[in-house]
Image (cartoon, rainbow, N blue to C red; front, side, top):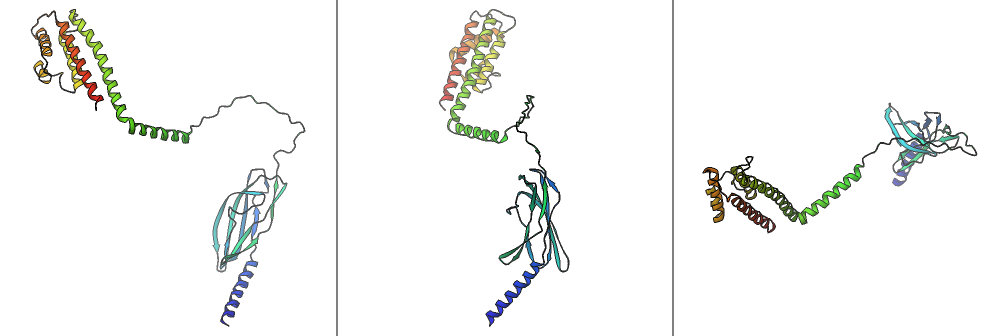
Length: 297
């Protein structure tokens, strides 16, 4: 008896929902009366129903007949003491060429896991053809005018190329970075050294021939500055005695002292060119040692 009572209640509830659903009359209408191929058109679907019911409208997965779904806009539900009112506007487009095209949409009344589809009235729209007549032998018109097309920068390919370049750079730096750094330092030293040798030789020649544009003190200062850059020591402001503390070399000592006598004692030395020539050879030896040091790291 208890089970029979439950079945009766379920049947009663079903009949109540069914009677409520049967009183629902969805209304569907096109908001424009004409449409062209590919043109967007709006279709409004509205329904008034008992507020105790749960209804759903078709979504983008529904088949809209000869129309393609573009988007939709829901409007807020309006409810009074007994009934609710819902509406939605669908934006559709068609690529069919039927002169009159029809559409009828349902609403779905939900009952537990089941649903009942109730269709609206059917509405129609007139299709306006773009091409009204096709001649048997179409006349083709040539157009040879050139139009400027704005060139768009391909950012996705640029970012891919940039990422690939950065990756390759990272790999090269990881495996060959030390060798590349050594080669760069050697290149910088070699470039500076060649420039110094050319400049210093010209100054040696000028001062040996008593060229008034260059003095013995100026030539010595050029040598000191280069040696300071090469060894990263404050040689340009050092005296001969201080330089000899850093480099214990007898021939260097003799050459520097002979040059000092020419600068500070006013002596004229016939061997001035030879003394400067030794300074140049000494700087070449320091340069070669520096190169060996870099390569051996």
